[in-house]
Length: 494
Image (cartoon, rainbow, N blue to C red):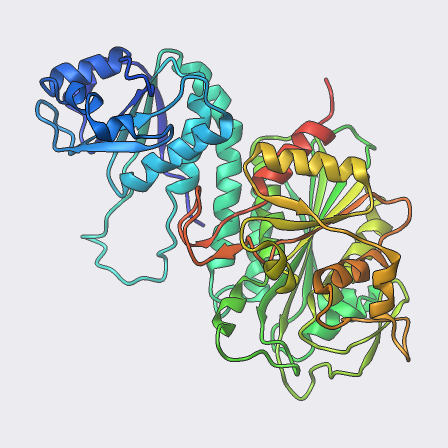
């Protein structure tokens, strides 16, 4: 998987500004007052910085914006990056500022003169999140291929910043893993390869169990198996356990939809845009990345991640529209549309998670419906919940991490849209309220006493334009928010 750009933390040494190669970044408040690093940069560049601060360009600059001086006189660096930043900046805005530096960085080394900034660790997280590329499948000459330059943050309290940044960088590494999985083409990321990559996290202390098709048959996960029965790739469920909390405490369960490629099955999707369906395992990708982050930072919580891995293909053995399938719970499902397959995967895994682990709460994630994109675009995930306390805690966590999330309604009236004439329930209610009826379907598989959140991430998992923290493609949305939720609500007290 992609590795984070190496980041070092050093005590401030202004003499290095003259000889540092690559790019050197300094921080200047909007009022133009110079800190020691900025004063040294101004002397080295023979007043170029002062002239910039007197310019109209600087006066119009907003906090978080970077103004670059190319090939500055008196410095070995190829650019002096002037980061305009308020002194009392929020954590999210500090991350965005770091991401702005990383976007300019490219493959060059970056030296950040952070002075005594109280948000230096957040700044570093922004750099780590944005300094990402997925180029493993691009051919190149190894002798001429650029290696990403290292990042060094200079601070008056470097050791403190390094300690504060460590758990944040664990989140960045988890987000990178999620992006790698979502970006990977389906001929590479098969169900078997996906499971193998998750199994590698045993080295981090996770307990990883792979349930093969014979075990899924034994458990009665027939709705999940029905989705993958048209594919040559075997369906699997992977269970990842992190036992960092108190022994005996019920875990939080994270459940992810892992459709490694979705053709729609017999209800075949249009050809245009079908290549994007490699991202239909985005929910499983977020669960995997979150479990990695929790393990890396040694979270003091019990969390179990479960992902259902299938491929939805049309063939002579594929499920047909009109088929009736019996779920693990025993509820019968009439399959109206084989392209409404994600809920068939999730319902069995959700029931299994509750039966086996009796969790303190369940959160499922899925690129479930195109309807959520119509409703919320690409800025917010849809949030559905049966529990106000858990839902509000998650919304607070998402807001704190700068990840868009918006609560959507649930209600018994929507159940009428998914009533079946011949079975207990049908898997789609048509176009009206499509995201809500999908959530109502999943709610049938949640026990009354189980706090539950369903996150429809179809609009935020992978996007066509760059975001604040990621280049175009997979975003890693959700890893930071879920990590924050575990930290704030489920961590064991000392």
